[in-house]
Length: 317
Image (cartoon, rainbow, N blue to C red; front, side, top):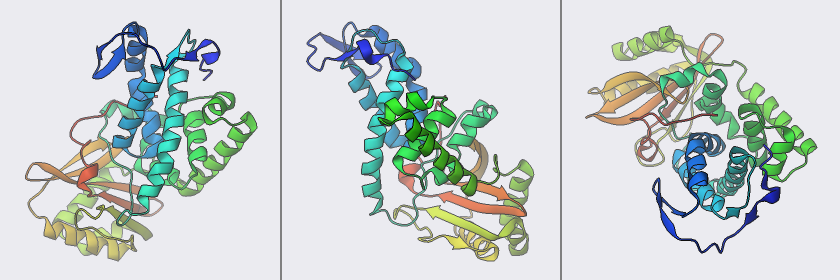
């Protein structure tokens, strides 16, 4: 990811005229850069989303990336590399600010879910990297470890290229990425652990029937349920542990909301249960399976994090 900026210089005082391009005010004469930025927008969004776990924050970082790109003048050999480097540095600052905000968050924090097009599921690496299970493990890493892993393992950057973005040596980046890979293996022993259609059918059938025994039987003995309501709606403030406790929680939730519609849709590179009340999305539920059954249930109920589920978000790597 050599950004080719050895011949590019910052020119914050460029006084060229301006006009509107793709919703942003772009200096005249920057048509080529604007086109390149739009061409790479989905890549930048995906990179930053994987670093932050927030689509809203990713949008802000991508926009800031464009503003900073406008200040770069002179020839650029590798436009994508330059944009990814800028986006990574802005995202690292956003991650630190995000951590401070999380201190006041009510209850468990889960990544903001995003609807994706079905073809994303065909790209195993991309689908795995944006899955809720992977994003949850990435949350346990330091900002630098997370960035090193995403850049090298998902976006194919070399250690030298990632080092330019992180302002670290190649050896340091390799060490960061190695630690991240170890943490991912510990946290996700089974790749592509999303539930199969058969598991989803059994799960929804048991819940609809109000069958405690059948629901409990689908879960592993050490299963956990995490629910994010953000203090905006009723939600479990702590993780629910154990198969029977989780089954009772889920059946209670279904009883409280009997008039709903449910759909199995591609969310975060896997299938998830999308629940609507009165036509509006009220929650999305993810299942992660392991040996013996469902090991993790993740429920997003925070209305501020449900806005990207009606229309697929363009992601790429």
